[in-house]
Amino acid sequence: MSGSKQKLVGDKAHVFRVRVYYEDTDAAGIVYYANYFRFAERARTEMLRSANIDQSTMFEDSGVRFVVRNCSIEYLTPARLDDQLEVYTRVLEVRGASLLARQIVQGDRQVMACLDLRIACVDQHGFPRRLPLDVRSALLSYLCVSQGSC
Image 1 (cartoon, rainbow, N blue to C red):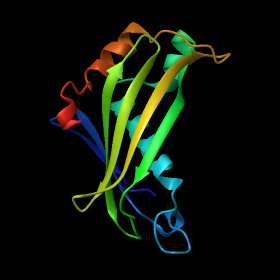
Image 2 (image 1 turned 180 degrees about the vertical axis):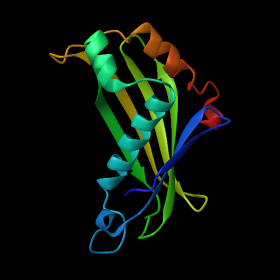
Image 3 (image 1 turned 135 degrees about the horizontal axis):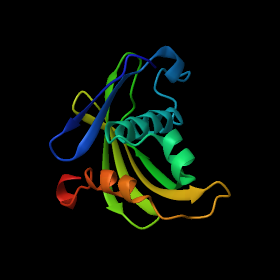
């Protein structure tokens, strides 16, 4: 699953592009369900990078890291070998120690899957910690205020 590209689109969504390779598919020739989580994780990481948030540096400097606290996914249409997918990542809410994100996996103008995630900020022992102010500010730049466009 290499050859990915990314960009920021006008409605405060980060877009990460990825092609489906043979290794991503199951015996039926469609993307194995768990691989949508991999696509989404890579897209979130690239969104953070585009917001100048380096997760390794964040841990070294602030002693905090991100963990997925909750994730729900709805599968709508299967993606197949060689499909070019776009993963749209939007921040719906930023709280003191967590954020809510929505990720849409789309291919050929058709939604394949939709994920809603609660991502928590924790210390090295797994206890909740407030988001560092610079990280919070960077995440707010991706905040989608109009639920209709999210």
